[in-house]
Image 1 (cartoon, rainbow, N blue to C red):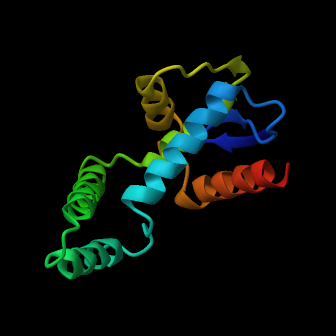
Image 2 (cartoon, rainbow, N blue to C red):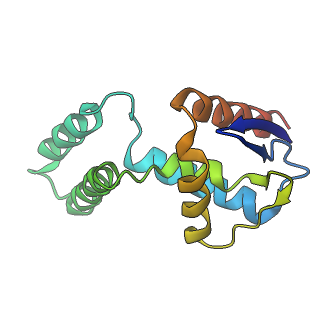
Length: 143
């Protein structure tokens, strides 16, 4: 596990695939996949939106209605998540929290993950969140 001090709390994250509970790993992968699908370019606020609109325009004259519907839903989800400040990546990070201040954390529902994200992870800087995410992803891939 890797530990970070975030606003006075000691938070331990699973970073070894052999120690990570299967349910936590599954949630982690799920939210990373969702984040990549709805907002693959969070660093460029309108980049993904502009790219999606361009793709939709390309397919308007074709029979790709399912693709257009899916792209519109992705845009909607991306806008919604930004409006309500829901950060899907933080749910991925929350899913691999093992301990907070020495107390074991067992997140079974999305509400549990949102609570961890709101109460602890939202107090971390973006740099720290990115560092945690990159560290864990790298470790999971290398094992």
